[in-house]
Image (cartoon, rainbow, N blue to C red; front, side, top):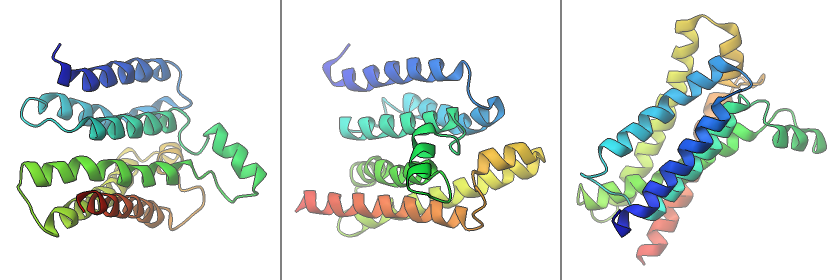
Length: 197
């Protein structure tokens, strides 16, 4: 194995083991499957495009971290994440906020690989190299919320709807999820800009 390939290969092996272990007995099998379709597609995409475009080790670590948070959330159907249920009880919160953390981390983590692609492959310079990844993250967040909605509409499942959407009685859940993703991306954009300076 080439030295430069070690980090991505090690991360994919660790994640595959983690994913298989938590796939054994998830809280809700249907929610687990719905939540992990995009995970499998993302990993497949990263493997298939690895030789054409390799991200930095930082980006791979961020993507790995996000996928661990997301997979753990799908195991508990997000709304039943024990640590955040405990925090909900301690602070008398209206809902389990684990999904908010993961949406925030999505924006934070995915900004860097998109930024790398924009600067290295698309050769963007100036403010465009910061703005395009930010806009891509906003688009991804909105598209994901629409996919969640369509999945529930197509399956006509009230159980899948409650657990998969994870609204927990909040009519503005989708908008807040998008806002948290945008906030994470905005922080990453500032970090990238400061790093360049």
